[in-house]
Structure formats: structure tokens, C-alpha cells
Amino acid sequence: MSKTFKMQELNSLLDDIKKARAALSGHLYGLDNDQGRLKCTPETWSLQEIVEHLVLAERGGFDLIYTAAEKYREGFPVWQGESENTGLSIEKIIEKTWKPRENAPDSAWPGGKWSLGVWLAHFRNCDDLLGNLPEVLQGLPPEKVIYPHFLCGPLNVIQRLEFIRFHIERHSNQVMELKNALGYR
Image (cartoon, rainbow, N blue to C red; front, side):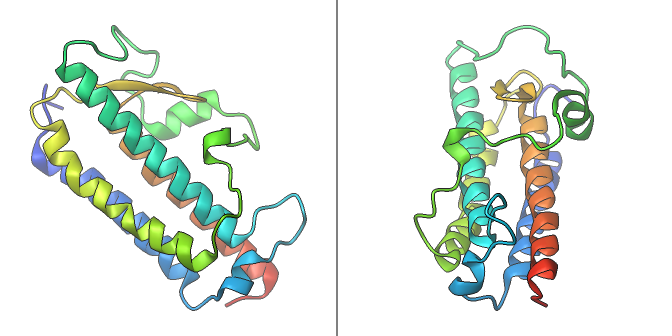
């Protein structure tokens, strides 16, 4: 990739996130708030909690991208030098850094504040955060705009966007498994 984002490359990453978000929303279409609260076991998350977690995590991820871009532009990058994750896809990074059944950080742990319908509306509204990224990242070298992830270590903008897509897809699979276990079609 070039030293700065090519709009086509950025748009491709953003489209991947939008597609993953639309797929997850589609899996939840037609479910009511009572269905959203049900769990298979006390230890597992409900559909509502999965969506709440995704919203909190995605907003946090975008906050870190925005912060890293702003600090880099100001001449005070959050991360300097090489990263052990340089050149790796998000799947490779996760493979080397995650243990089975990792826990979310407190900032992305669901608290049950709102219903499934409200969290789905917030989830869909995360597209607004995507829409502002081209302007925020204009002219910046994506491989140097880095902010550490609590498990993965330093992630550049490309890896962070790949992570957001990966994370949505991962929980989309959980949603489908939970729907099947609860007998929802």
C-alpha cells in the first residue's frame, strides 16, 4: 500500500464493515425485545448483550482511530517505530495473541441498559462514524497511524478497520448460534 490512503482502498475496508453490520442486523430482523433478552445459560450473553457489546467496542475502536490520527497529525504519534504486527492481517494477529474465550474489556462489557431495538439502532448508527473517516485520514500514512489494542497490541488504521469487520463477523456467528439454540428462525 502507498504511504497515504488511496480512497479506493479505504472505501473497500469501510464497505466490508458496512456489509458485516448489515448481515448481523439482518440476522436480528423481526426479533422483539423479549426475544433479545433470552439466554441459553446465565454465563452466555443474550442477543441484546451481543449487540450492546458490539456498539461499545466499535465506538471505542473508532475513538482510537480518531485519536491516533489526530495525534499523528499534531506530530505526537501514539505509537512510534515498528510494531510486532507490521504487515500482518488481523486474522494472523488474533491467531497469535488471543487465547480461547477472551473476555471483553470493561469498557465494552454489556450492562443491559437498553433493549435489543435500541441497541440495534445504535449499531446501525455506527455507519456515521465510518462516513467521517475518509476526511479524518486524508493524507495520513495508514501504517504509521497506530493505537494499541488491549489484546492484539499495536494496530495500524488498516488493521483496526479489519478488526472491526472481524469482530462484527465473529459475533454475527454467535448471534446465529444463539438464535438456533433458542429456536428462532
